[in-house]
Length: 333
Image 1 (cartoon, one colour):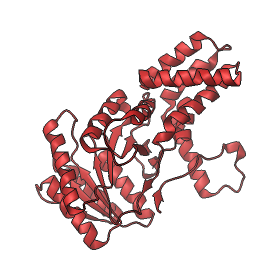
Image 2 (cartoon, one colour):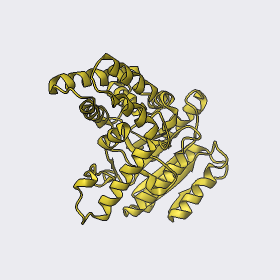
Image 3 (cartoon, rainbow, N blue to C red):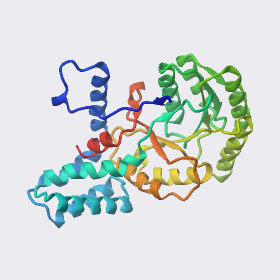
Image 4 (cartoon, rainbow, N blue to C red):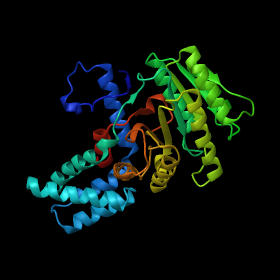
């Protein structure tokens, strides 16, 4: 079974031997960049533990810091409750010890979101990608295409974002850069483009068909209905498809990102997320809010919701698999 980007948290630098492999070095570099990107969130949370005692004031400050990081009230309360239980169970008496326990609690909260994108169960694996304009949807598709190609998989792109004038041209650039085929139509219907892409992917024996659908706000109901139509038409080309329905969200938008996840999930039944633009954000705590909501979601869905990838910049290597422990460490460091 082929799973993309599944990896473990790298060992601390002090524990890594001098014969560190290139992959381990890359993982260390990624964790460093992630910490730097979440510094605004992390510094506000880490600052809570600068005192000498564990008291109600510390927990109140931590509550405020988590809320400011857009963790949301339900997730914040859940984290605080679990943290207090761990502090009591371990007999911790120093704020630094509580900080370590907080990392463990946040890791457990985020862990259900961790999962690898599995691409060997269907040929082709049809991935439908949605997201509001400006979230980095088409760029994320381009980066994902490169990672897939580097992993030895054949990819076919579908330029079904006919709603935004420059979307097809942007995807054409990525197709040319990655040397993969692309299905597009001049002023074509998004559903028709998607149908043609899935049909072509099957005929050409492609491993993955990536469908770039139109960016839209979840409040634009007529456009959301069009997305549902695209999904229905894809199923006419392949009854088991789409095998993944991904939503690209801007990590800077905080609780608004959670609102987008809820709306798109209700319409399409999401299977995964790509969280972009985490560089410089003070709202990284929104993933805790998403994790808590995902455990309570009522929408019938083919599989549990996962955060497959997170992005912290414009470079190809700035899109990596989500790792709960890494993220929790970066969020509090």
